[in-house]
Image 1 (tube, protein in one colour):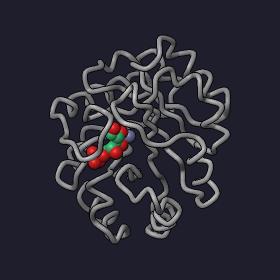
Image 2 (tube, rainbow, N blue to C red; image 1 turned 180 degrees about the vertical axis):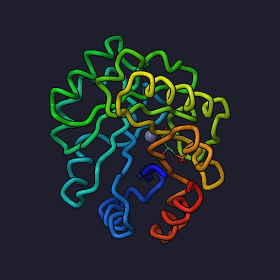
Image 3 (tube, helix red, strand yellow; image 1 turned 60 degrees about the vertical axis):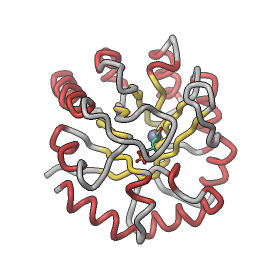
Length: 219
Ligand code: DX5
Ligand code: ZN
């Protein structure tokens, strides 16, 4: 069976103890941390930005999987690279010039991803697949943790899997929103490579046991 990555969304951790939480993830055997950046415009919520990520970087060598839910993300690519992000994911709906944003990220030598809201067709990334390390399929409307998986998103995973296989690229499929122990197996079977989990992960310490529970559930 293929390797699947769990990327815990820090949105559901204790923001006052970010360094401790990152250390606990590392100790539990996780390799990725999902950072949800929200600007109060693209989504109706505000979280944190480059200064906080830069501070986190000093305490952690985890892979910083950075999900930008901000308008015109191309304005801030350099800041997020300088802060220490390993991967930068921009929303197709957040810029009029998606190819330019993607190229700007790749130019900086970090990994590059595009995210699609639930109602945005997979077609939006078709011509960019050769340039993308990952495509993030949102399976809830972005902005908040703890929402329910939108059922039609399962079909989008299968469709995108087919497009990537057809294109012959090694682009990963990430699924974000409402991922649980109960649904993770069918997401992996549909073609997901990276699963984001916020509430279904952080509410159930110890983290090493929770990671194991996910691995057993999707195997
Ligand atoms: C939602 C964020 C997600 C969120 C997932 O806008 O992009 O990363 O933290 O949280 P859960 O797993 O609770 O749906
Ligand atoms: Zn996210």
